[in-house]
Image (tube, rainbow, N blue to C red):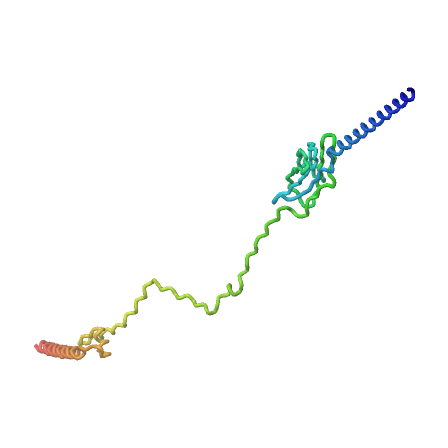
Length: 236
């Protein structure tokens, strides 16, 4: 009986020890599992990129536990805060963006604060690309006209002169016949008749000559009778 009692106490002790080992193992497993599920800085990433013509810094949180974290972006050279956002991670990843009017090759620091788990900067710091998101518009050069288009062709006809709207200047009148010499008893013919007589262009030349001869005779007679009458008066 004594031997059985000793064996029973030994088995009980061994059972308690085995139970303690199992409990300790479970506690270690839970502790390791809790550490694995806890948020850490390696679950955060940041980069600078372009969103159309605007520059942004995007931060992604892939924490499967979804612990809220406060993300702060500052300019490394001056410490000026650019923006601050709260992100709740997920297994697929949750991203927040910060609009930044950044210049090429500028460095920014991204700090993460997640409860008691994380309180540090993402490594390495974020450096913007070497080219801006929006390029300056270059003016389109004006095409230079070719010599063929700028030099007029020799075969091009010169434009016809426009008709003059002013009335033509009146022609100079023909020269008139010279005036008759004073003292001539014969009547001087008209200017137009003299010209026609000289050129023989009138069909009445003979009639005009006859009339002129008659006038000469009449004039001579008048002079003759006038002289006789004057002589008769002087004899008295």
